[in-house]
Length: 319
Image (spheres, one colour):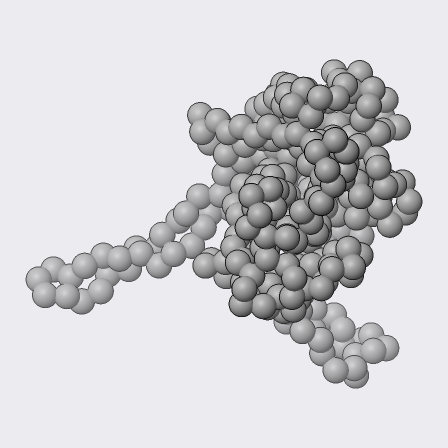
């Protein structure tokens, strides 16, 4: 089922619809928020990893739609049980966010700044879609997924689980193809003289040139995956699974075809949740791991792509 967060303007509608329900007498529950989804995903990942949250040194919340403009990561870190020794911050890279987040976390682990890192991909783009545009609003859902990464204690001669290779890029010349722009509402305040015009902050609805984004993704994603595989020292034949940002099934088919990979290797849950932006890769990976499809030692080629324009790939060995 697609997840759409409840916003202030819809609460009264939901309350009215609930009047005739059998459980209408039950106590109202707190509405889900991006932060609450991130907390749930973080707790689930920590539980699966068997890590003490007090031992996590880094928390990154990859999102372009935070509840708090100043960042949700610190409050999420506190809620999942991390201490004040944990550094937590948001990372904004749209649909590439989670991919960029795990690579960033990998640098902290590699240089010894942290032993364990929690990376959360969470977005609520239904807040910013144009609900009058049925060509685009039906594509998006809200969600959160998370992954715990740990420093690898194996010797250099043994290739253990972790990030085997990666590549990341951006091209601001494609900025107009996918964006959600600041829109300030002018407001005149009384000051000496003729007064001063300031602006109340807000954002416009998200706009996307679907044709250009499709062309960009099918061109750049196969290339960046090949770049990451080369850095990892592996070939396509050594990849067990292909996991792409869940934006469009046709993009996945084209990327797999250009890499010479069968669709049987492609992990997808797009039909369940739609495009959940930075949450799409960890959501799909979580389901694949819990179902037993992804097993210890499997090699996963991941790629994210989206606004910026930005794109990147990482080769993961699951452990």
